[in-house]
Image (cartoon, rainbow, N blue to C red; front, side, top):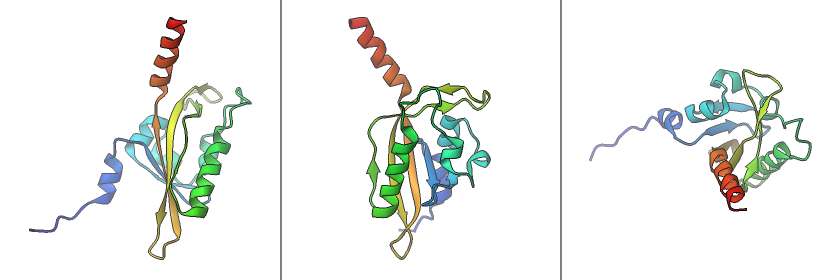
Length: 146
């Protein structure tokens, strides 16, 4: 049976779930197409930038600690070399065409180490499936039953 060559970059770009690759100090090095679509930013706008510069906390929501929750999870992954599944997170995203305007968004993030040949963490894989519509529908259903 012939061995098939796999183009892993094409696989990464085609994944239906948003995926971002970061250095252990949170600099974005790549984003797949699904991540570009859900974030509203092109790969060129993301690469070589710190994730928290591009995706800051919503200043209108002082009680939300989305960036610190994500930062803590990424640090755990970088230090332990183990995946970290975060719970449901509210992480509002600035609307790209409207600076200073944030949209309420909900995510199910998972952070995974990418190990080098020597077993050390080389990259952090951040996958965040957006579930904002599901949360909104749930809230609407709860309000209708109240």
